Length: 112
Length: 112
Image 1 (cartoon, chains in turn purple, yellow):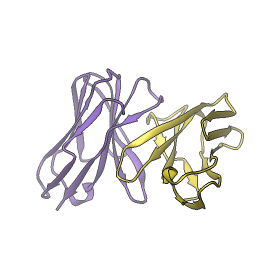
Image 2 (image 1 turned 90 degrees about the horizontal axis):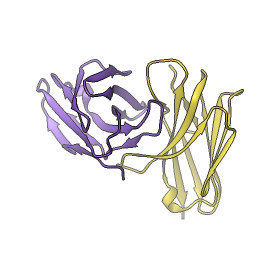
Image 3 (image 1 turned 90 degrees about the vertical axis):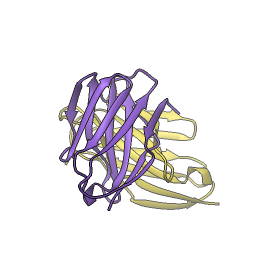
Image 4 (image 1 turned 45 degrees about the vertical axis):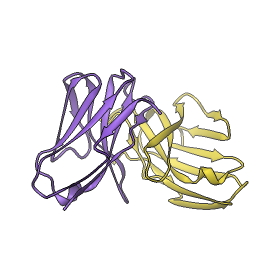
């Protein structure tokens, strides 16, 4: 596996609380991505980063924010979690835009 | 939506048989990729085929690309129980904001 870790791996939180998920890479790849995976929808891009402090929105960015202050870390924040954000979240990295992506193990988030 | 569409949604075969999955897309691409996901795990990159390529092989995997029909096929030969997984195509479109757009996947079951 590429050197990608996600933390936490599982989290249960209540509606309205803030949540931050962390993705850490040891590969020094320029691009980092956050996806959510839901039954019937496949994998959908939330936000991605193309360098330190450089980020852009994906298909389903509403309700999420991201930050990348170091090459190796990409944080995903749910400002005020809602039940519709219950999902499995994957981080991925790539050397180039449109190139092969390498995925982390995922974080299962449940919002009650 | 630019999302690629895999066909079939689910496929069940006997060990030793070949498995074929298809992916169709709507606009011009730079490359198309195939990924595998075992239950509860992150996606794993299998193969990338560029728009100017027609066929690529990797072990028991064979991928074809027909840009005139905007479609790709993934063939797994001599399938094994360990090939049981979901398979996703992902497209790097010439235009659009999203670096890589994933389809909803084909769930393959290989019965021993």
